[in-house]
Image (cartoon, rainbow, N blue to C red; front, side, top):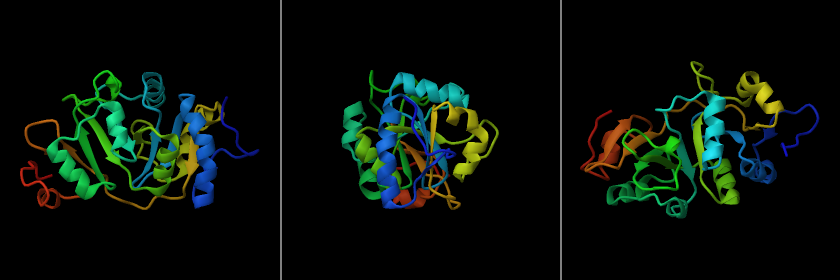
Amino acid sequence: MPHTLRHGDVTLPFWSAEEIQAATRVIVPHLAERRVLAYPTETVYGFGTAVDHESVESLVRMKQRPPNKPFLLLIHGSHMLDRLGLVLTPTASRLAARFWPGPLTLVLPGGDHRVPRRLRGPEGGVAVRWTSHPGLQAILRDYGEPITSTSANRPGVPPAVTAQEIVEQWRDTIHRGQLLVLDGGRVPPSSPSTVVDCTGRRPRVIRPGVLSAPTLRDCVPELVGNL
């Protein structure tokens, strides 16, 4: 069944610890019903779903996502990688030990027959981040599984930094119960996470972000890319 909100509401408050705890009781069944969730992150608002083919395809259709642009996964603990068969290479393990939870996305090998094709990049890897956002950590802890993540916006529109922007763009989808929006207030401006591809012989920076290549190279000297 679609989620239930108070009369006149189109978002769930997601500020205090009490609100986050109350929201997870609605979020978990919403994700289990293969619906889409909008939530605040460390950088912008994001869209996410459960990690199964039907859920991912519903997000693809809603966002009109081209086939060559995969989503990443948010996790809360390395055990979530094990469940999907994703592999922390020796280099990825060193980076994760130093910078997770935090603004570092690692592209990992593995996940054969467990991770939907839409989540794989052109080289076959799957992008993963252990989020440091306390609200998302609570969702992942209660849900017990990873969720997908992509910026909350229509094609050609900047990513949303408030819940109201999402409501304005997706009101019909919200009222149909397909999209549940968590309101965590305005997200302060921030650089995106740095993305490092760990599927090749040497780790490679493929998107610049909060963590600079020199900072990462202090941990893994073999890192290539100076973005």
